[in-house]
Amino acid sequence: MTKGSSSRIALLSGLCAVFLISGIQVGTLKASVLRSIAVQNESQDKSEVRTFSGKVVSQNGEHYILRDEVNDVWYHLDDQQQAQKFLGKTVQVKGILDTRTDMISVREITELKA
Image (tube, rainbow, N blue to C red):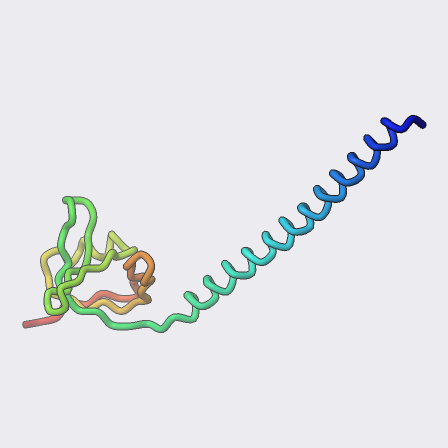
């Protein structure tokens, strides 16, 4: 073996070690990220059902939202078919709010009588 080939072998061995260690770190990182996502999903699944009040309005003629005029906020509703039935009416929505998207996962919508 020549002097040049042994230095090349050493260089290749070093590079292989770096890639191997990097691969292990990437695998660890992926596992960490997956655990984090699972914990987030689990915490969202355990969110409590809350009650929201407001008027169902059409955002663009096709998308229905809950407009809470008292608190000056609006929420997306995941059940568009059910929301459409209450267009223009003041309602009470029971569901779980995803605070990242302001989307209510609707459990029930009932009309409030004035």
